[in-house]
Image (cartoon, rainbow, N blue to C red; front, top):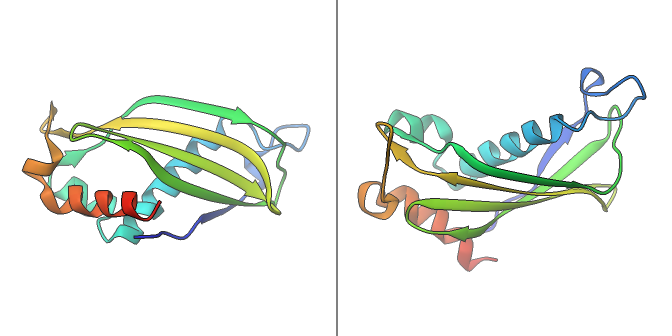
Length: 137
């Protein structure tokens, strides 16, 4: 399955005194893109959490390439870079006007009732939905 990029329009309050998007906001943009990505798969965060699965962040990495400013529309492409039955890693490419402004990565584990869970066994539909994106890459 192929998903559409997520678009985030930079808000005024997300900028620092120099008028540049504050670096900490890019982590939020990544989360927005992940939530949108899951919604596009038909297995949104609300459903996942209602079934008792949470996916906390284990690691995060960002590389800033260009600045963004108020009202810039940041197009965020997200893809699964690796996946096991216990962890998933995403790669993000953020662009404004076709130019890369940031590249990033995040790794998450899967927990059920606070314990690691083998996703394919406990939640095969979620595992299948995520796995379906690997074929399209």
